[in-house]
Amino acid sequence: MLSGGDFWSIMDQVNEDSLPPDETVENTETGAILYDRALVNQISDAHFRADTWLRSKPVTGALRAAGRGHTMYVGDGQSEFVLRHYRRGGLPGRINSDRYLWLGERRTRSFAEWRLLAVLGAMGLPVPRPAAARYCRVAAFSYTYTADLLTVRVPGIRPLSDRLMQDAPGDEFWQGIGEGLRRFHDAGVCHADLNAYNVQVDPDDALFLLDFDRGRLLPAGAWRERTLARLYRSLRKIRQLEPRVAFSEANWQQLMLGYSRASRSA
Image 1 (tube, one colour):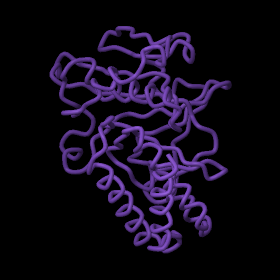
Image 2 (cartoon, helix red, strand yellow):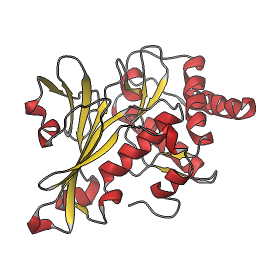
Image 3 (cartoon, one colour):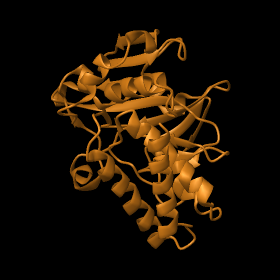
Image 4 (cartoon, one colour):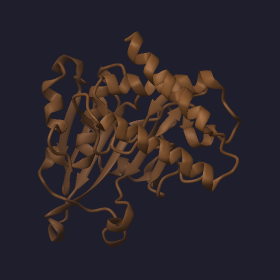
């Protein structure tokens, strides 16, 4: 759950003209759907079921890159999207797999992430474009909800973990990753789970960030070092899991060099 400098303060920081002009909320029998009319002309609960799309397939990847089996590529023959059902991880997920405490529509995980992605896109940051978000409540569980998010698929991107199993990228690659991360940090973007799977690269090795569930915009602070440390631990962990992963301490030093240089050139 967001707190302190949470998502709701974001809307005061961004000119409303920079947000999607076609944002629409439609009520459903069990909740509501938030969507961008420029991307989706008509919306229904069916859009959040993979089997109703013309094309659908699970997101796959090396190691843990595919997530916990709750993310799908879907498409209608013209457009392609990524459909994600929010699931709880760790010990809480063993007890309650996908239900979250109801704190009002604005604070649902899916609506908050949709709007945060819209804000980051308006800033020109490399993130997926949000298409639609949904929450569902059932009378018997009125104090909880489930959530789903539909984003536009970014062609050709893949997790950093997968990229590092292809070959050993050079110093320029790692410095570029550091520069890209610094761009997010300088914009005040705090990613809640920065790891080798949510950090992704396109065919030209340009950085994209995914999965902004619980993300926030914050003033500069110690959270920057904490998020970088999280990524460092993730890279070390996947290297231990898979010897083919090309990552070394020298690579990390190059990433930090790029991060530092980006600061000085800003």
